[in-house]
Length: 469
Image (cartoon, rainbow, N blue to C red; front, side):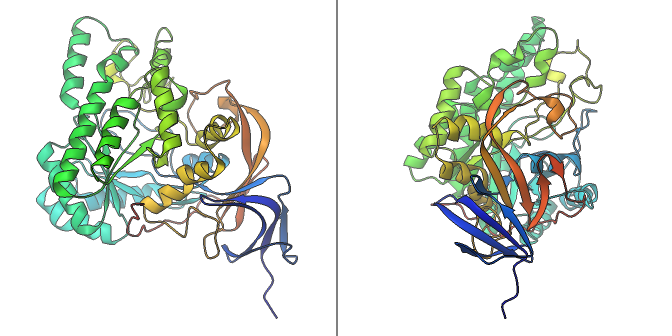
C-alpha cells in the first residue's frame, strides 16, 4: 500500500519558469513527490483554488548581521531578516560572509555561522566577500571553501575597506575559473567617486541628495566595462550586481554580443526610486542612500526593458538594513556629517516580490513565468541550488508560496517584519501578496502569522553554479 502523502496543495494554478498549469502538489518528507490532478486525500490539505502556486523566492543578494567598519550596525540578524523574507514569499536567502582586511577568510565564515546558527526560519546559504586576497586566501582558503559549498563570492571596485585593485581582481577571477566559482562584482569607479566627493565637500554640498551627484552613471559604466574586460582576459563568467540603468546595461549587452559570459542583477530601488528621493529636505533623503544610487525615470524605464528582454537574469533585494533614527544606523556620523558618512543601503527583503509582481506581472510588463525565473529559478541555478530550490518539480524541496493575485495591500512599515524603522515604499499600493508560505513542506507563514520556529532553517551547501545558456 502506498504511503499517504503528508500534504496536498489542491486546486491552484502552478507556475514555474517554463510553464503554467492546473495541478495538485503532493508533498512527503519535505519534498515534492507528485504533481497530478485530483490526488487522493493526504494527512493535511491546503485549498489553493483561485490562487497562484509559485516556487518560493530565492533572494540571492541580501545583508544580515554583517560586520561593518564604520561603527554602524545592521538592524536585521538571522532571526528578523529571514522572517521578513518569508512573509514576502521568499524561502531561501543568500547573505554575505564578509572578510575584513587582515582577517582570515575562513575565520569570517566561522564568525558568520555563529551569527546564523539557530535563528533562521527558512533555509540559507552564504556568499563570500573577498576583500584581502592574500597568498594564503587565494592558495588555500578560498579554493577549500568553494569545494565546501561556498561557490560564489563578491568583490568590490569601490569602498576603501572593501575594494580590490585590477591586479587583485584578475587573480581572484583566475581562481574562480580554476575552481568553477561565480564572481559577483560591485562595479563603480572608486577614484571618480572620491574626486567628486571631495569637490562637493569643499563646496559645502554634503546633503543626502549629493550622494547621487558623487556616484554618477559614468562611474558605474566605466567600472562595469573594466570588470567585463578583466573577465574577458581570464575567460570566466561574472555577474554584475545591482545595475542601476542604461549605461551599465549597454556595456553588458555589448559584451554578450562578443560572446562574453556576463550576467546581470537589478533591484527594486532602480524601478521604484529616483535621485529625487534623496532630496526630501533635512536628513530624510538619507533613507534612500544606496550604491549605485537610484537615478531618473529614464533609467527606470531602461531597467524595466532589461527585465523584459533578458538583459537581467536576477532580481534581488540587496536588503541592507540600517535604521534611520539610530546613531548606529543612518545617523552613525550625525545628521551634519554629510552624505559620505551615511551607511549605504535600504531595506526591501519583504517587499521585493510583491513590488515586482504588482508592477510587473499585474500591469503586463513581464509574464508570470518571467517573474518566477527572475526571482527564484535563475538565482537558484546561478548559485548552485537547482533543482533543490527555485522550481516546483518532483524531487525538489517543497518551498512554495501561495499567492492571492487579487489581494490589494498598502505597504506601510508597521505591517512589515524587518527590524528597520522605515520602508522606502511607504504608502505604495500593490496588487498580489503571498498568503501561505511553505519551507520544506512545512507551513511557516499563513494569513499574516508566522507558524515556523526560529532555527528550523537549514544551511545550504551550494554546488557548481549553472551559468545559464
